Length: 160
Length: 188
Image (cartoon, rainbow over all chains, first blue to last red; front, side):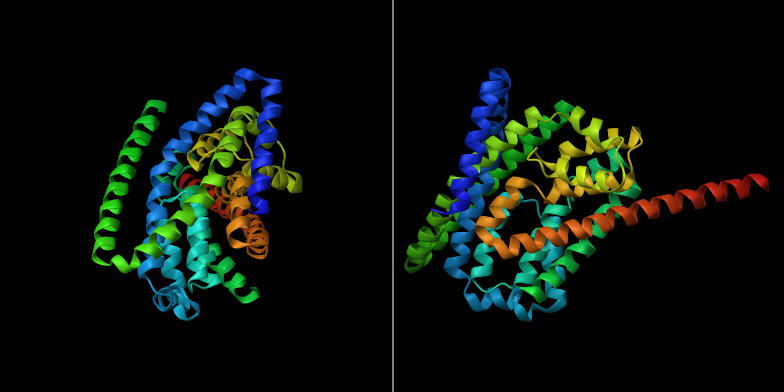
């Protein structure tokens, strides 16, 4: 067992008890919300779990590192960042996926680029963002996010 | 609007289940074709499942609690009028609270624009909401380690603030040239 796991569970438990003491009805409402989002996320969790299993079973380390490793080069990083921008996986599940890629030969830069574009850029939510904030703000935010995600990833690759 | 969102979520759920079915079929076919790989695949999937199941419920509970306790009104109240360094910090703080997916934040941001909040704060708020969420950072810490998480967090904050300020400048600049252009046209 990992310290982070213990901490996050204690933290959630503490907040839950505090909330329950303050307002039972609100707590019940929030637990209902939590259960709903848990069920909603479950299919994707299982998809990723099976995907990682298959990836580690069939994809060899050399294959993964060829595509996303140190020698992937700028265009490799660019492509992975683009993939992260287009894909729509909850970031919570993306971290373990990223960890297993990292363990199997992917480089820090590509993994950082993938996670950063994945979380910062929402192509699926873009129409909603344009509707609520206007075309200019939405396109600028997503476009510049893509550029800074690559910069962040390159800096991380140099430092770590 | 709300019904529309629910309908979309239901469709998304059905799509996810269909993809899951396809993935399971592919996995079964592959395992029966390569029985020697079965051990590795099931072992790594199982290990992964255990890790997820210890963390996901806690994260979901946290998100549910904060979504109920930190209302949209609170965020608007504090972010609507503060500016400067304090505004930037508040924008990151409210964005980082564990309060649901990004599409929940857009209407909040729209209200903030109407209330006259600074564009830079709104951009920082949205970006913090998207990628500096507290439970997200804890999961990153667990899977990718302290160095990776802290470095990415610091870099993200720095660049998101720079991005917010530059977008504000760009918007101000284009609006100004537009107004001036309109004036020129009017004078002709």
